[in-house]
Every structure is written in C-alpha cells, then in structure tokens.
Length: 60
Length: 241
Image 1 (cartoon, rainbow over the protein chains, first blue to last red):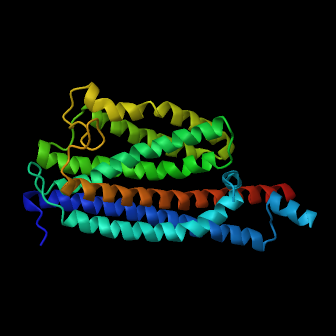
Image 2 (cartoon, rainbow over the protein chains, first blue to last red):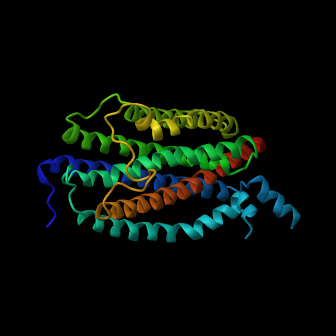
C-alpha cells in the first residue's frame, strides 16, 4: 500500500498538473496533425501541387 | 540512408512515420515501469513522501534546459548552415520546452509549500527558471505571430542564442549565489548524493520523460513540415489564380 503522508494533497496536485499538461500537449499535437493532413488532402483533391511535385511530374 | 539525406524534409518525414509508433510504444513501456518504481520508492528521511514530487520536478527541469539547448543548436543550423529542418526543429521544440518548464515551476512550487513553507521565493534558481519560461513564451509569440516562416526563423535563432546565456545561469545559480534551492545532488563533481533506492527511479523517470520529449518533438516536427507544405501549396494556388 502506497502512503503519501501528511502532504498527500501537494503530491497528488503535482501529478495531476503534470498529467494535465502532458495530455494537453499530446492532444494538441495530434489535433494539429489531423488538421494539417485534412487541409493537405483538400488542396491535393483540388489539383494543387507543390513546386517539387510539379517538377517531378514534368520530368517524367 | 546517409545522415545528410535527412536534410530533405520528404525523407525526414518518411523516417518519422516509420520511427514514431515504435518510439511512442517504447515511451509508454518505460513510463509504466518508471511509475511502478516511483510508487514503491522509499520516502526520503527528510522530505518524507514529498520526494515523489522530485520524480517529476527534476526530469522536467532537465528537459526544460535541454529543450533550449536543442533550440540553440538549431539556431546555428538556421544561421550558419541554413539547414531546411533546423527552424522546423526549433519551432517544434518551443511549445514542448515551455510545457516542461511549466511542469518544473508548478511541481517545484507544490514541493516548496510543505518543505520550505512557501510556494515561491525570488532566489536565483527559481527566478532564472521563470526567465526561461518567459523566454519560451517569447519564442512562441515570435513563431505564432509571424506570417512568413523564413523571416521568423532568423529572429527566433537570434533569440535562442541570446536566451542560451540563461542555461549556465540556471545550472550554476545554486553555486554562484546563496539560494534557498538546494545545490545539485545528481549531476555533480564527486558523484550523486542520492541513495540508489531513490536515484534509480529518478533516472528511469528521467529516461521516460526524455523519450516523451523526443516523441512529441518528432510528431511536432512532422506537423510543422506539413504546415509549410500547406503554405507553399496555397502560395502556388494564389499565384495561379
């Protein structure tokens, strides 16, 4: 059994704060990834290509 | 694949897509083991169970400084070699470094209240870490308000180099000034002053935090490369219109 002693509230608050910050960071990065992929997909569907992509296709 | 090939964002992206799931999995496994070791680590003879806060505070502090160190290396990459991924790496590091600095400050305060009797004192170590946090916020403001990443890259690189002065100040503040914050007890001349029963869980937790840092950084770099692709495609679209 883990006992946290008389200062348990401070220990729990420290772990909760860390989890909130880390989970927030993970969620933000994952949502950003999904958003960038969605925008890229939309642009590609409309036939817009990057310069390097167009150049490669021009060479072929 | 030669190391120089990674300078190409497309090849770097392919590598990140392959490595990231494995790195994320390894991070979860090491974190699970670290938390198990932390849960069963003994209480400190002076701090009691509040030593458990140190397992978060110390790795967060190390990574807060490492984050700025990475941005400093990236600054050289931007200014000297104009490496295409250097600014991407710096921009990806800034929010992660800021988050770890915030964790360091919050957990330090929550440890300070029961141990020192106060959440905050304006001593050199605490103040220099607060300055680091403000520098990270400045870096984020610079990146998030700039329209053109090419222009913000140079300014961010200069800010990273100027802010790097603060890193040795943080590290040696406890030696140079009379601070309430205790001197170094892990990385110090003459070896660690911590008992192995507490030192090992601390080092394993530091490894878990470091793996988390790099997992998040690679994921954020991938996002930034995609964001720059979106920008370039929108510019092509605007030019064609």
